[in-house]
Length: 179
Image (cartoon, rainbow, N blue to C red; front, side, top):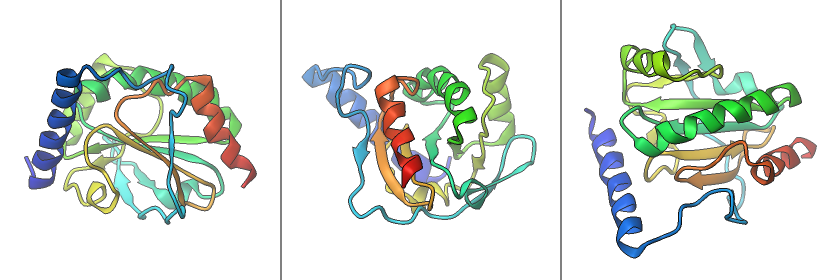
């Protein structure tokens, strides 16, 4: 396991432990601020990664439309839990010109393929095996998701699990189509 994956794992566990200790409510559909605006909309770091089948997935391929970019791992329970809602969201927004990808952090194609044998996912799952891409984004734990505007700038972020098919959350993403 790479140092970056170990650090992200430790941070994710610390966040979960803190939430349990203080009795923090689960972030999700009842939270009115589902996505946090990112001040200044910085440019998203470019990437060119392979999916488990060896197909290239590039950030540039999604220019001109909003894109949801999730960072996840198979060993992360909240990541696994939110994946079905991401699939449902993909089914809703893919016909609306909105992209969705989930970049796997630090794992190999066989590990992700095993996950896919149990969970149906029809959107790209590029592999960041060396953790180079995740290190170029402000990720402090998994899952973390960024929503990019059509120009490839980070408009929103979400740290932790979300219900990605929540209509209010998807409306925030849809609003980016006009910019």
